[in-house]
Image (cartoon, rainbow, N blue to C red; front, side, top):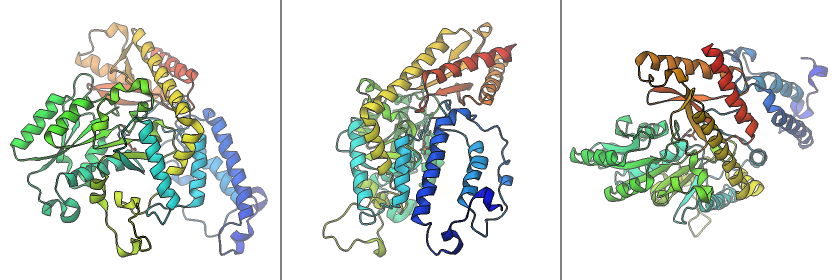
Amino acid sequence: MDDRAHGELDAAQLTGLNDMDPEAFRAAAHAVVDRIADYLAGVESYPVLPPIEPGSIGSLFPEHAPEHPEPLAAILADVDRLILPNATHWQHPGFFAYFATTASGPGILGEFITAALGQNPMLWRTSPIGTELETVVVRWLREALGLPDAFAGLLTDTASTSTLIALAAAREAAGLDAAAKGLAGGGLAGEPRVYASAEAHSSVEKACMTLGLGRAALVKVEINERYEMDPAALERAIAADRASGRRPIAIVATIGTTSSTSVDPVATIADIAARAGLWLHVDAAYAGVVALLPDHWRPFAGWQRADSIVVNPHKWLFTPLDASLLLSRRMDQVRAAFSLVPEYLRTLDRASPVLDYTEYQPQLGRRMRALKLWMQLRWFGLDGLRRRIAFHLDQAADFARWVDEDSDWERLAPAPFSTVCFRYRPAALVGREDEPEVRARLDDLNTRLMDAVNRTGEVFLSHTRLGDRFTIRMAIGNLRTEARHVERAWALLRREAARLDA
Ligand SMILES: Cc1ncc(COP(=O)(O)O)c(C=O)c1O
């Protein structure tokens, strides 16, 4: 190692028994912040998807961990050389795949402070501020989403965990006492059943796997031509299961499904849940933030009647991963599902019970996620967040219109939020879409089209299958996206389609 080229070792690295010297940390932190600011300012210059092959990265790194300290300058040089070029750039304004996760400036700053404070709000006493700020932020968000104060909640890592927690609570609420006795001993009369639409996110099925209900417990309820759950089919499925001795536990309704962002009829489903005495969980992981906009209440009609709701700030609220908001009107059931307090975690020096968030989740330790959200909410203000979400909704409406107005393109689903599902379907093929060879040709054409567009590096789009058709998704939700990026995506799609067709 050439120290002149790669910087000097810090004295603490050579002989120290403690952490980095605070002054060395200050200098290094300034250097890191400069790098981050440069990265964010120049992120558009990277290809959104790195043009590399799987398995090509590992060999760039030494086989073994370094035995001796290395200068920070060398490590940061390798961040430039090895890390940045091999990242998929979720911060890129041309990121239109899956659902966006932007790390906003104030959110990143919140992560800095969170990391520096090293809080673990598992118990109130292990982080009084982490615990109480979480309660404040949960209340702020709940209120901003227009939900009544009967809902309390917590911040988890992901919607998958939030849904797992909600279904564990539903399992307890159904009287299975699985937390104490397990499913076998918990008075399980009949196989458990959970109902979600065929378009629900796979995290619902995973929760069934993890909770011991099994994948067989999930009933995938039929959908209509708009990819929304058919409530009549739901009611029939519950009745049929009850008649054959099965044990319905919960219904999961989705506002903004992953593939097409369809909206299940939550109000009708809430009626069914109430009649059947079932827990209703609403998965609004992606679209829930639209409830911040008073003009857009329609998809959310009835969601205030849910037993639990998940909304992910780390999707469309620009919060750095991870941050998922789980709200429930029945936190007692959530606690029943997860509370276990061994002696070493008991708080002895308080007369009154304290709020220990660890009692509401499977893990003990937890990140302080409230700080970045608190900083973000203050920096943007609710109004600023609404403005940005509304901008994305407008951009998606424009994109949907461009698709609709071009006879060579076809929209494959309604676009209630900021995601447009579509495909290239040359006008010459209109009316022949259902012929098997035309189907196969369109699938192939669109697969290659999406690949070609992504290979430009300017944008990244992902796909799904709707009605068994290869479907390209344009998911707008990145904080750095401007109108010109959406226009560019459309131009690239048309350019590459013309090339493929030529
Ligand atoms: C509707 C919906 N629910 C749940 C999830 C899972 O989210 P997470 O990655 O936070 O677990 C997703 C992910 O895209 C989603 O679209």
